[in-house]
Image 1: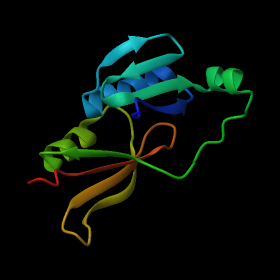
Image 2: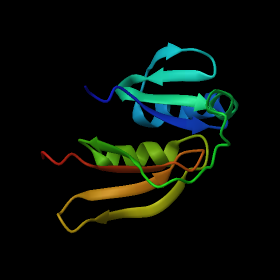
Image 3: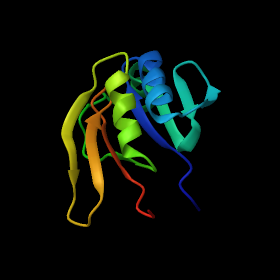
Length: 121
């Protein structure tokens, strides 16, 4: 058995799709309207659909994060600065205790994202 996808609940599927496509170069693999599968295994599902399918109210701000590595963190930071909408930076770039530079930000729905230098470099 293997993990196939990671689903996050979003308020506005189009806003979230744009965010992940423009900043993280993800492409749409499948578009089911209220459920969009992106490259890399990330699935976006609109809040109303989530609540209907699970019978549970969505609670934003859960613990956890999406983690990305990049071969050029400085280029990503420039891309982030040029992004068309404000992005919440949770922690500016810093070097962690094992020597990797990383930035912590939030997507439009408050999901935590860490972007770090490629560890293999």
